Image (cartoon, rainbow, N blue to C red; front, side, top):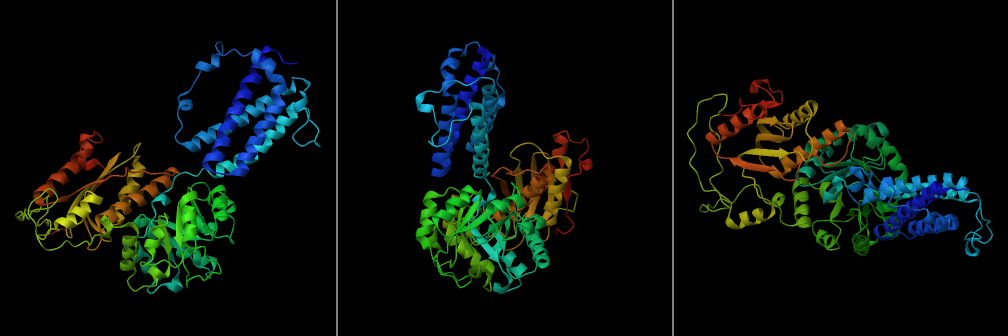
Length: 563
């Protein structure tokens, strides 16, 4: 029989279980809009009330909230939840614990005569079982539901920023496939997918590794089609599966919690199931007829609109999309598009991708031509007045001769207005930039500083001329000159994205490493160059990391090629 303390334990855990169930039920109802999960959680809540109901009138008599020592015994973590997902996870753990405590306490409670309304379970032909055994069965029912709920709690990924997604299939490429892939990236692709249905596994893996290396250098996402095993072996960011491929739940078991899983969908039921299966994004389509992959079905733009209005994870419209009809897709509310032949099948994949991205997202920094118009304008807040070149200085450790200034032809006022509206910087061909990135939190360890330094150096001569850089525990300074035709935004995005991936792999974590905003300014002359170089060189000493700047390992300068 229960004593006073036993009743108090039962009362506290019955309350705890009901509260947790209500949190989970509301998540299924309002966040997932899922009748099945919501209904099952509600059924558990009602069954728990039936099993514990006979004991609660006595239990509440023994309640002593004022004298409960646990009411003031709290940890900091109990008062903080990072997001809705953490709220749901905490509720799930709380429910499992409460049910187990109730089960154990009820084993010693003895049988209490039930009220007439609770004399039988909800199914009239099922006899009432002992309360402890009934709670045990509820606990196992919940464990199954908990797994289904947790699948839907995917962390935010970089895929939410994807707008242009390009599929790479060699047979559809006008030029060599890897060259085409890089041109697509330079044109603005945010994510590439390797889709090769006919390759044997060995060759598929070899190409996946090549494409993965390319994507990491540029800081764009890399997805493998159909093959989660290849995605893992190649170090891809994720895998994409179709309705006839390996189910998303099974693909997740192979690639793990930290990678992206995408699912093709053709009707709203597919989309809803993809959310429940833990997909990070869905493909939506076909929205137009496509010669690349002919289909008997055409959900069209109506389906895209339905997804945009109901589904909470990122969606990518696919099939038959070109620069001529991409505006119709954007009007549905779906923010990203996936293309194949429209980009890779063109002679100038970079130009086509750039135009597609421009029409998809509108006028942005990346869509402004890198060469400024030749007509000069007067000195204003948003224009660079022509400055005379500073006389060359002698070659010293902290100076280089003939540092280029901004081109004499400055952008037009209208061009600058457009650029300024989108980002507070712009690219002037031939200019040198001083750039600063800052970490979001924590600091780099020595080994992580080495990873970042080596990555930045690997881009030298490929995408920019690296004159100097210093990797500090919480920020990075660079002096670079972009290669012709490459916008500064694309370079900084590549450096930050790829280095973040390296650090996450090193830490075995996921998430953003760098602050969203970066600082950059044009270095106008040799005197300013010397000033920035001295500042970078002395930074470790000022931070008391070393007594002598020459002893700092994460500093790089390369002035030999500057003339």
